[in-house]
Length: 134
Image 1 (tube, rainbow, N blue to C red):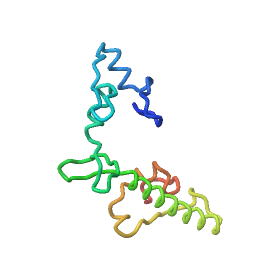
Image 2: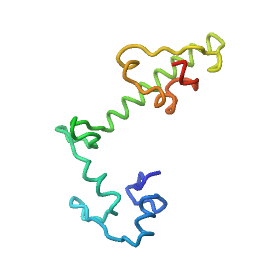
Image 3: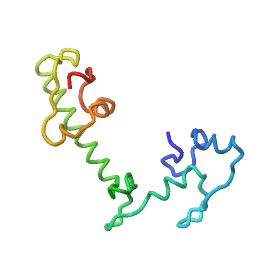
């Protein structure tokens, strides 16, 4: 879990927060919108959050490319992961195969060209196979 819990409260077990306290740095930044204090490790993260033209929150990933990540982006990834994983496991079950039986996994289209293989293996989008066969 990160510095901010789902409830919006500070997670005192967060490494960045513990380092700040252990270093004797108790200074906090006051969040202008709510008047609530934020520890310094939150400040950089907080400054990257904005709203798009439809009022949805987003976080800046790359200022040079004007690249943002929103909850909608995360939901789209979740849906894609679910669809791909379900299809692969459905086919494997119908063929009586296990992940260890796979000798080649081919990802096609623009998704297949641009995806980081290690990342999709890490999130479980495709069966756990050796990265070299993808």
